[in-house]
Image (tube, rainbow, N blue to C red):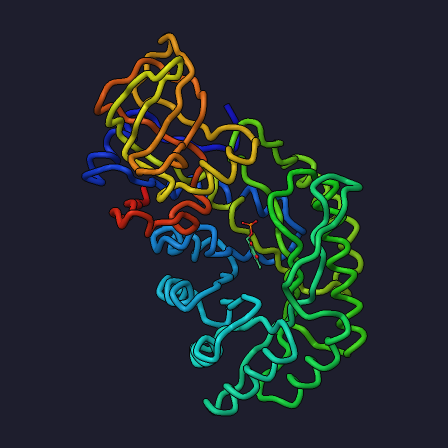
Length: 395
Ligand SMILES: Cc1ncc(COP(=O)(O)O)c(C=O)c1O
C-alpha cells in the first residue's frame, strides 16, 4: 500500500455513495488536499510560492479548498479562469497559460486583470492590441521554451512547442515594452511525472539559471519566475515512488545556504497539478455484472473510460501497471483471484484494470479506484456514447 495515497474507510465510502445518490462518483478529500499541499511545499524550493494548475482537477469544490492553501492558480481556458476567480483568489494571483490563445481569450484575460503567458512574437502582438483596444494595462509572463529532461539522470531531453524560442526573445520583449503590458514574470515549465530527486533538483537549477540569464540580458524587473513543478503522482503501485524525503532534505540544505544571499535570488514560484490532487481522489463504482469467458474473469462496473480515461488507459495501457482498485467491505482474509474490471461502454477499449486481484463480488458491490484525483473527468472522453457525466463530491 503506497503511503502517499489517501483512501476513505469502507464506512466513509458507503456514506459517500449514499450522499452522491448514484455511482460512478469521484470523491475528493479536503484533508488529503491539505496534507498534499504540505507535502509538496516541503519538497519544493524553500520560500518559493506554490501555484496549483487547474488542468489537473478543476472541480469547484477542490479549487475552493485549494484557494486557501496555495499562492496562485494556473488556468488554461476561460472556464478554468471563471472557476479560479469564483473560488475567491485575487486576479493578480491567477496566470492564464497556453501556447496559442485566441483573440477572445486574450481580451477576456486582460479584462479580468489576470496574468497571461506570452509564447511567441505574434501572441505578444495579440495581447498588445487587445490591451490597447480595451484601454487596460496587463501583466505578461514570458514563457521560455525549455526542453523536457529525460525521466532518469542522463536520459535524453525532448523538445516541445511551448514558449518563446531563444531567437525570438528580443522581439517579444520589445513588443511588450512598447505595449500597455508589463513583463511581470517568466515561466519555465519542464514537464511532468518525475519521481527522481536528482532529476527534479537538476531541472530546478537549470530553470533558475536560464531565468537569471534572461533577466540579466534584458534588464527585467520581474515579480516572479515560475520554474515548473514536475513532481509525479503515484497512479499505480508499479510507478516509481517520489523521493519526498530526498527533495525535502535538499530544500532544508538549500535554505541554510541561501540564507546569506537571499536578497539576490529571483522570486520563485513552483506550479503543480497532479502531486497536489492525485492522491486526494478516488472513484467509486458499482458492479453491474460478472462473467467468465474462456479463462478470464470479468467484473463489469458502471464507470467507464469516459470517466477515468487517463488512469485506466494511458497509464495501464502504457504497460506501467494497473490502477489500484479494491472492493469496499471485503473481508480482510477473503480469497482473491485475478479479474479484468471493464466498463459499460460498447467498446473493446473500455477496460479499467487488467488482472487485478479481487475477492468474489456480486452485483451491487462497490469498487473503489484509489489515487485518481488528477486528470480524471477533465482528461476523459466524456462525450463518447453521449452518456451521463460522472459525479464529483468533496468531503
Ligand atoms: C504549464 C503547466 N503548469 C502546470 C502543469 C501541471 O503539471 P503536473 O500535473 O505535472 O503537476 C502543467 C502540465 O501539463 C503545465 O503544462
